[in-house]
Length: 435
Ligand code: MCU
Image (cartoon, rainbow, N blue to C red; front, side, top):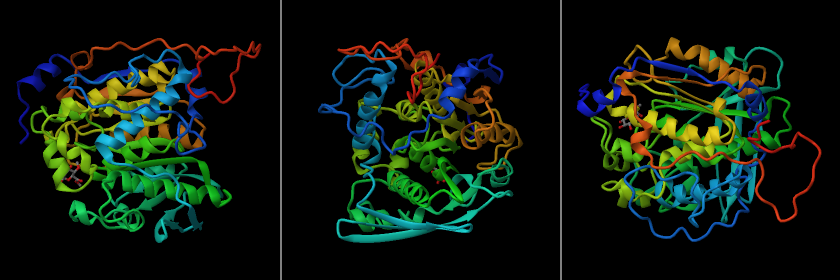
């Protein structure tokens, strides 16, 4: 089970754990505040017909639009991101509906309640809150499940912990045609949306309630999300699909999480796609026709990483357990980091798999400092540490083997029919704009 075969060993050849500190601190400050005020900034973008998927054994080009043209400016990314979102929903996760007609609820110093009604149906769930010391209002980290996240460090860094039980929103252990939980109470037990998108929808509804609460206890613009293992898959998906989340921190997420889907399909010992699809209805029903041929997927998880850009992302992985596909995780991070770089936000993504303890979801001393730094930078907004890539030599992927595209140098603004001659050097509110 702990076998590392030829391919993996060869890729790791001669590589010690690498630490690549990122430069460009000024840009980081600008984009650190880049969490959007809305769940989906590109909701108004016209997305062409998604077409039918063509086979590609390498990672799809994140910068190539559905119409075949490449993105040339940062401002174009907003609508390219929306295309990726639609592809991700259609082929991987199933649809995550937007904010329902009615979302109400309460935020107290000890808990959050959420009540939703839509389609003539109602559902609700709640989540305990644990505040750090001080008077607040506080940023918060939504922690999926009850293990694997270092909640003591989260609180010591100044953020509240919201304990989210995703099973209240989408239960595990059901058949695909009989899904249960608050999400499926609204959208129907035969909804083709998988648990990960349903759980993400629940996170978005928690953020709706925080926004509506007036901000005296929890700040609405400083929400992070984390979780380990299946909850790492969930935390990643939540960050992908809600641009109000300022910091996404998936831990040891494995297949259906961060690792590229094309990669886990051939990484020795990694959880096969068919297994990830059938173990629980995590992914959308439509993914079922791709488990045997991920090359036909018109999207892969490096583009989900790109959907999180330029917001804070700290990917934590465990290279000691083959099942977790950490080599494919490193490729997702490296390829997704190309989107961050193109947006001038290369400093906002971190990846760390160089850890000693092989125990799945252990609390790890190696992650304490980067965890604290990410929370300070993106949630407390008091720090500006550079992102770090520390890829374990045990499971280090090779990006050049996986891509046939290059990273464009994006101009700041799209060519506009009527360019506005602005003398101001500071483009206000333009995410990812670098000086
Ligand atoms: C890594 O996450 C999962 C994995 O996909 C499953 O195959 C295994 O059963 O459980 C892992 C997990 O959630 O462990 C807590």
